[in-house]
Image 1 (cartoon, rainbow, N blue to C red):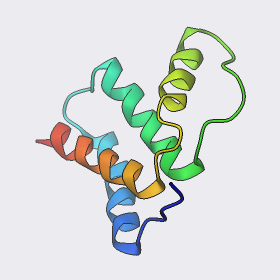
Image 2: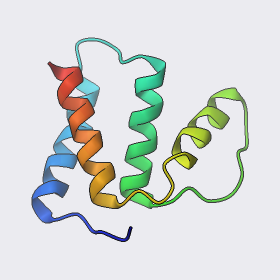
Image 3: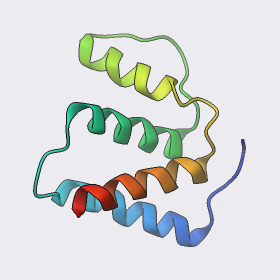
Length: 88
């Protein structure tokens, strides 16, 4: 659970997080929520607190909270994989 990402994976993740802004097509709302949750899990760890705000903020919180316990490296790997798929 507390598995830390290696340097190569961190570099790959950083590149993927920049590439996601350059996608030719906007990802679906579900894909965006998954990317958000994985990014937050990779960079901040488990979701804390309770859902707050409007529908958008609650949806983001629920998505992140659903992957509590996922390791930093697993979240980074999954994030990179999704960005690679979206980039084609």
